Image (cartoon, rainbow, N blue to C red):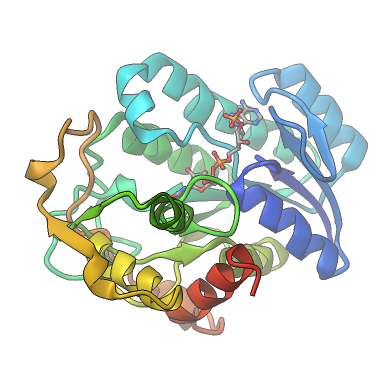
Length: 289
Ligand SMILES: NC(=O)c1ccc[n+]([C@@H]2O[C@H](COP(=O)([O-])OP(=O)(O)OC[C@H]3O[C@@H](n4cnc5c(N)ncnc54)[C@H](OP(=O)(O)O)[C@@H]3O)[C@@H](O)[C@H]2O)c1
């Protein structure tokens, strides 16, 4: 495949570039930041994006670029819309010029989190945050262009900003660990997700897929698993409630964002690993074991 990855300097995008290289695909990345195989380009520049697509003529575009600072999005909805909605429209329109299939990466934040059980792909979205609202609008643009939406959650890896790195850093600094025990979801590791997205890019199925690692857990429970993976006492983390966060976060989080992968499995793809497996691998990398 010839593949274009947007957000290629970010946490997920950099893993996508690596996985695509390893699988023998020809890959070009675009991002606001410099990264491996990356052209620095702002996706809001429609003319530049069109020129790049016409020059590279990829078979598929994995659109991972987004403004992912959830609380900042809440405070600047116009910027969130430009970064997450308008840029997606530019990507989808340019991809159509060369018949490239778009796989748009989306989020559990499109749900309000009030459902008792796992969210299915066809459950009606009802975002409560600016970030979730803009990502849902982006989903609709991708689907409108015949593309595939891949929703994921609680992204982690050995790079970027994520809870695994935060917890290991706090341990090194001797800082206290307090995490909420009333928000439930599924951690997803960027390397595993990259492999899943490459399958969707290859197969061009269209529609909505839930692509996470397996194993529902609260943030408190997840931090206990991170401590275990680091050979520490899981009792080092203290459970708190969302209402006890001081200061409260500007953007509301879904209390339940467990995503079921029915469509993924029905399509015959291999089930994702339990998150504890890639967690152990990432902790080993970060601890140089
Ligand atoms: N992180 C999570 O927990 C999570 C959970 C569910 C879904 N997702 C989704 O997964 C995808 C990847 O997330 P991530 O954590 O890898 O995000 P990330 O590390 O923030 O990477 C996104 C990259 O896109 C770049 N970008 C933003 N706007 C751009 C533009 N106009 N033109 C070119 N590049 C642009 C960003 O640059 P700047 O850094 O300069 O903005 C950043 O390098 C996103 O679509 C996100 O919504 C993430």
